[in-house]
Image (cartoon, rainbow, N blue to C red; front, side):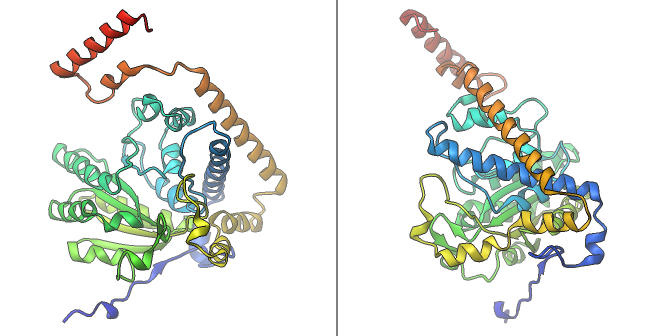
Length: 359
């Protein structure tokens, strides 16, 4: 008999919430790496806070904040190559920015433009997936294609804990393990599927242990520790690239803000809970470490925040100044070569536009 209560799963952690931890492993990270990781997380936090305010001002559409999850996103993205494939949900802004998505383009997306998720050539990011867990299947398909073509790419499906309650997740896991494809399932367990807490989603103590049922490796990592996330992701990616198959990573973290700007988290979360997780802030622990090494000062912090704010303003202004496109663009963003029926439909739309004198 297999007793799930006897299953032992330890959480991987290198840097604790006070900026201390496993000193030997911390020492292995260079000053340059730590500065790069911190700047990526701080940039992401500034961008997220600005986007949230801009939505409240009516300057962009509905937005899904990610503050609190920077280490999970940045740490995992830093372990990838530029030619790896990313399959994001609607919350992976930091991942997409690190993988080459222009900030101006993200403003197109949150303004509802079709061009918003049409990535530039060479940026291997699939369009943002709104349907929960659907991207897990897409990632497996891409990974299988890479394997069949003999390409060294790894595919990564990013999703939240709520996605593990969907059938797509389980089908993707099973298929990936059976066909031994190079895919990483990266779950950011931020404790809530909108208003549904983790305990009401599953009886499993962890999401990581679900990997066992499908015959693949699973690991639980402190999702607020950018060092541990990076090391865990790098091991998974390197193994997948060697042909050793898929892996499920559960990054234990917390969404400090609302699920989206249409959500009121005060209706289902206690202030004490939020404050307890705020003390585990992923940025704070790295900044303490940087200060200890003499690598970051308050003046540098203020200058960097100002620089990112200027970047956000410039990207927003460039986005709103660019052409908004037209309904005809719908026909151009699905196939590389439009099939006959689609081409006919586009031609009909263009004829009607011309008849009405619309540009």
